[in-house]
Image (cartoon, rainbow, N blue to C red; front, side, top):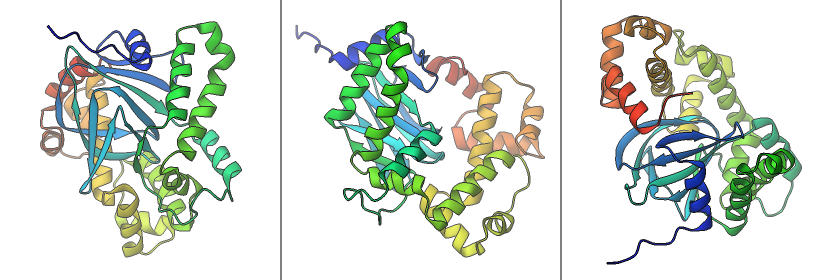
Length: 301
């Protein structure tokens, strides 16, 4: 009988820190570790700015006709919150283990400013919301030191913030880091779109219109629409609908009210329309999706 493969040090550390299926919190608020034993297909996701490092198993993201790999050889970096579809490979014998790392946007902006004018970055790089990059030794090294520190509270208290700062830096100067830096550096158009995303996040449950968003951004409707689609892979209306549904998904999973109350809370005038849109997006009813989330992702924070 063939022996199972010996896990790498990174995989062994992650498995120890993530004993339960779903998201496992760590002693650092910006770091979570996902453990999954199930093959998943066509799952809608909305990631916060940051990076996902898959140490065992594999994931693929699908957005606007492009495929983004994140597996043991690649990681996914996210510059702005963007809804996309995801598939993953895992098994009981070799569960998927992935580190979810949230950017501190103030720290990231500080590093980008410090790197301005560096010759090894292409100032013409196009800003992108999602970037799949090949894993490099420098990032694997800081991840291993970070996971080791997470096992020892005293070590983490002394080294944790420095390790997080280094991880921000390594991602921003890594392969295709120029596209991330372009989004964080924000040229005139990108900055207006990113500010518009912030406005949408604050007022997603209101009756926002594309002309209103374009006017607030100081752009014509065609220019706003084109810039929005280029950065996020979604039209403004698609983005707002996805954000409403993802917020509702969390509220349902947290048992924050009846379907009618939650529908109204995220901006739907009709509970029936909300239920139809929800099932079309997630392929399950709200209550079915809440059960699925608890089974596969754990109790939502």
